[in-house]
Length: 213
Image (cartoon, rainbow, N blue to C red; front, side, top):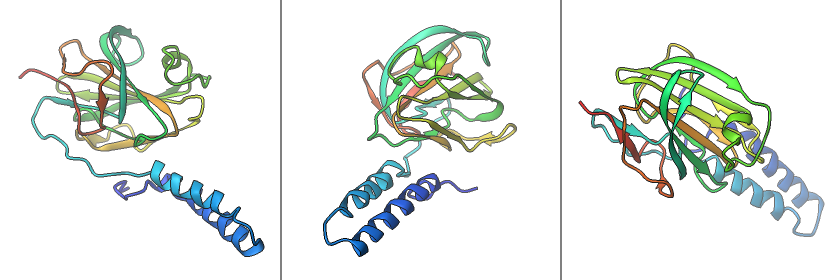
């Protein structure tokens, strides 16, 4: 299915309901209450925006899987897919960021999993291990890479458009997170990281790192 529409299709039910409510209030009342759902509908359209990105084509580049702010870069033990030491990059998404996630590096979708049970604020470090999450394992010619979509205190819905066996390309859309949240990226230790905590990144466009040839 094509996911390149200017507004993600997951947003249209919210927009449609709010526009319908605004229309009903406008027809049934002489006051301006209809402006509230109309304003929310406009915000929903803004939130579910799905812009095109200028995707770098150079081989070996690792792209950001999400828009947002880099909270932390560290070396951790990843025991679910990579099953080895890995570089972890944590990206926080505010309500005003684009929430469509993208593939950081070309390869094959080898593993998908869901985990977690809580809805802590996404900026908390423990959210990565306890919040409801969607894990996407990609096998590339440079090793295993994992993207983790994480819910937050507001975000309660994760959408992944991939399935096991899919061949994916760098910058391709992989899913979205509804409302404020966090995205984590796990990379082999051979990756050279080119960003720092505090930097603002764009999914599918900002270069997170690279693999040497």
